[in-house]
View 1: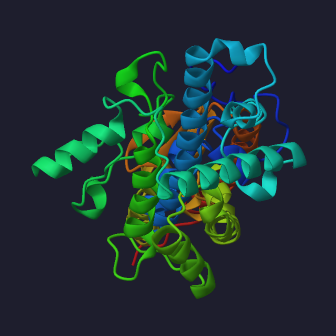
View 2: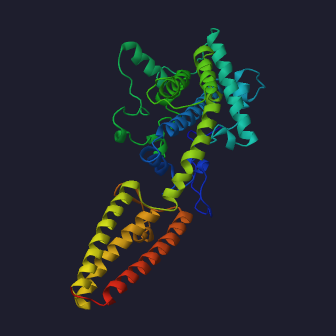
View 3: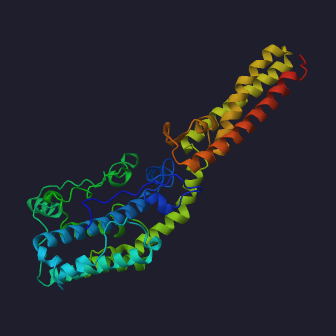
Length: 393
């Protein structure tokens, strides 16, 4: 029998390569290539966070279904303990053979044969249960104090239900990261012994409908672009066949995963594994660098044409050093000093520690290379304008 909560995937610090998208989404990586950083990148730079939110919501829907089956199996064993001794052929037999429901949610393309088989059994059981409920045999294992029942009662009384997973519909910058996937907690990963937190069958139906009405229907609040065949199949399954099992979203989930892996993830790795600056910070360094270089060249030619002594020309070290350093940082998208200090920028002027060992080693190598190039170019400019003979006009 499974435990009361699902263990979170643990990061793998001994990885000697860049992580894959599946490892990032499964929370097996550390900053700056973790799920939080990928969410911020999709929101602020890729401008396609709705695709990531859809993938996360479908994964959460799968976790919700597994949690429901876990609770249902536990309640059946508690109510009928003699089933453990007898070879019952009722639904409890099906529940006992669904396998362990603690597998982390992920794209079906990354699952092994055993995990795919478990997911297929889970979906088949939920479809069978939906058919039984539609034929007048409702499920009696959902307490009235469950989340779905409470929301149904609130809707019938005209009150607005409170949902921890709802996101504000405000401005672009006001949408916070998802608490269920940005942290170790989850609104459904609760103490399963508490009836107030038991997942009801209505919760699964509400979760499937929320995904459909939020992301998939034309004109929805956060519509994503999917092939028409996939959209038609999902809409038909949910609205016409009354299905809410995880297999309904498998095709859309795999399509979204492949789109993020192809279009967004390479840029994320370039930005976070090979650099430590965000675009606004990089642009600021470009402006400062151009201004410093303009001032440096203006002062250098002024010193030459006014035949200033060398000890005065030594002040040219300041503008040329600042200019070359900031322009090199902008060109390579890395601040070498901050990289060597183990810092990476996730939003403008907000820094986090670099905790992924392989990424830390890559950034240290690039930082040393940029620093060497900066010192070399800066020394060449300084020597040129300090020791060139002056000629007063």
